[in-house]
Image 1: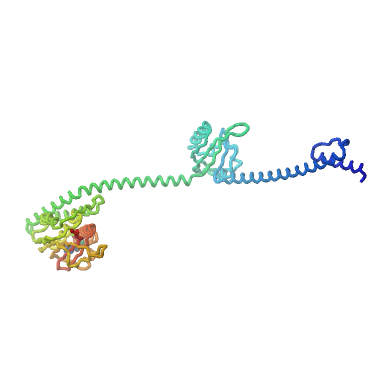
Image 2: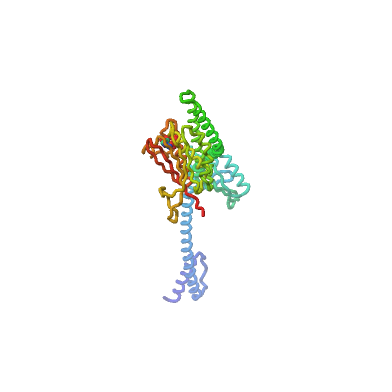
Length: 439
Ligand SMILES: Nc1ncnc2c1ncn2[C@@H]1O[C@H](COP(=O)(O)OP(=O)(O)O)[C@@H](O)[C@H]1O
Ligand SMILES: [Mg+2]
């Protein structure tokens, strides 16, 4: 191409580029060709830069759109309802969760007063809450019942925050609303449950107080009943066999014994009667009881005491031993309606006849044995298999507690009770108790 032509072609390209770059058209007629070449070069570089910036901007715009979509998704499908409410309580924005909670369409909510969603009875709660928030410009939560489109209401917690809008500086309240119906129901159940528990505790406390009271008077009561029994016995011994009063006295005696059994039961099973174990001389304990025992034994019965003077001592609750002995004696007396022998004996157990447990060293613990035998009616195998069960009785007016009490008293003192009996051949109860090793 001739130089002139080349130059004008270059000029046109530069002008074109200038226009493209929106720099405007300039008169380039006086510009030398070298300058135009470098201008052309600069323009090309500028164009590349512009394109790069453009690409960058497009990329950023794409990312912004993605973020906005992401945000909109998060906003709309958040697990809580979001409400933006103006200072005048008008709903300006709400997410889809908020709309779904109320059952009202999104578009129908915008522009509506928020208080319309609140149950009438709870509107004051929100009003006061809103006032407080706006006054202090802080955040805080309140609980109100919201009403759904179908008229049902539900408990909601509103976590609110005051926001100043940019530009006009007006304030808005943003509320995150969560349905707390389940929580409220659980709270209600817990409250009902704890009220019930409180009542039960109250009842138990009263029962315990009564138990303490009953336990406290049981001893006195037992003594009174024992006196009634012994005087009934005196009276029975004094009146003749044909005397019509006899039956009345027997009734008095029977009922007093019944009362005594129940009192003993109370003494043994009342939780407020702690066991008081002491090193005890069982012979002395029986001797102390003898006077009382003789008073409850009819004069047709011979009482024999055979107490081993070398008897080793035992670690027991003496009151429980007394309960056991008196119940065994009552049974023996009742087993001999006509006459007979009642023997109370003590001895150190040496024969090895007792099915004793071994101690940790494998040695048999030394034992002492108390036996209460009678020459009464005795028992068959079937009766024998049930005698220690509470309330088992073969008597017309029995309580069935005597032997259960004796069994419990023996158990509580680490002893063993055994019985040997045959119909018509009397009975022997043997109680084995661990002796105290005296060095
Ligand atoms: N020494 C005894 N001789 C014969 N039977 C007895 C004797 N001791 C207890 N029993 C039998 O064991 C049963 C249960 O005795 P117990 O628990 O004292 O209750 P209860 O004397 O009120 O019947 C008696 O009803 C009786 O059948
Ligand atoms: Mg009895």
